[in-house]
Image (cartoon, rainbow, N blue to C red; front, side):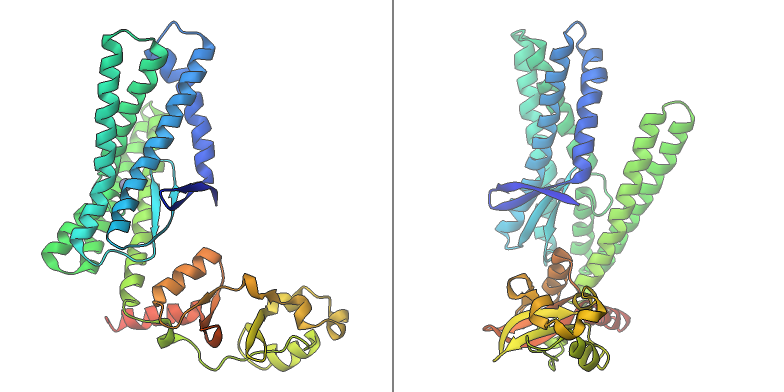
Length: 372
Ligand SMILES: [Zn+2]
């Protein structure tokens, strides 16, 4: 769903695919509508160049906003795995949530503060360049940079979780009540309420004439609503797994297979006998790979007898592992990042267990029900 574009300040930066489409749309809207309307009398080529530069400034402004969040997070020891840019902002993917409302407050404020700073810089540059009557090709992108950063600050300060404003609201309630789940529920409800209001106003606008703006509002509203709900889920999971280590939930008796086993024997002696779906492949205690029901399915049945596990297994370097002392939340994050359903638990390159996605979800469900 996203495209890696490199590293910056130690963070991996990726762009959500939707950005590419939005980026082109923005260039078209700027070059054919916005710029000719505000700066008439220029050539067609000029409008396209201005549109391209202005869209580039939007991209850099969003990047700067997200980097500011991430740098503050890193300063407080919260690891950011990567930054993914969406159209109105981005997501700095955190393995863990801040454990202290003051840290969350600083992290959440860093983004809007950086956008306000950029707005001031672009605003002053616009003012200076118009005073000395520079070419509109220079003034137009600068002024756009001013408007867009003002918009980024304002939009992200909307008080619905998980927007920055919502995080600030959550941190404030969290500080008052000392209860993060309660604070998240309240901030999320405000977010969902805000989202419905936007969708409602959006439909109203769409049916009373300005349908493009209306649809935008509906679209943004649905985006906020989705974000609010998934963030609430995220917080509940994080809370439920707080302090739980991988070793607490892993399965210790792992059924392993040898590389010289045939697929036929693998099916009859393992897949049909045990409930596990994946099996580590071991030789003298060394992990060679991992084999699953999917690997067996790839081999046509008539060749099961002549095909060995070592020919179909996933090799060692493709296996995702986790240490027993790592947090269960980290394991969950690793699974979703690598899109796998289980992790081998490895201590000093010895296999000591296996942890699956359903183990984790079961733990979340139990602990949530018991209110732990
Ligand atoms: Zn932000």
